[in-house]
Image: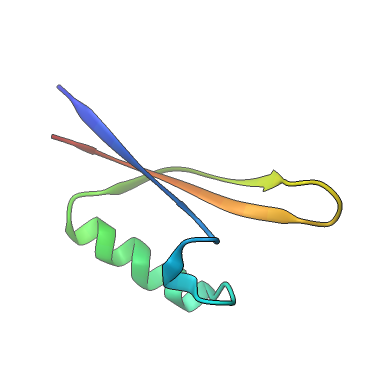
Length: 61
């Protein structure tokens, strides 16, 4: 079995200038329809008061 991964962050172009939870839900559902599953989600601290959401998807190929 071979697995491929995709990483999405809130800096991705799809978010524009602001992160929107409704858009996140739509993106997760769209990826799920292509066989992707959320492997993990985390918040990375970028220093100061800056945090970034990171979502890792995986699927068998």
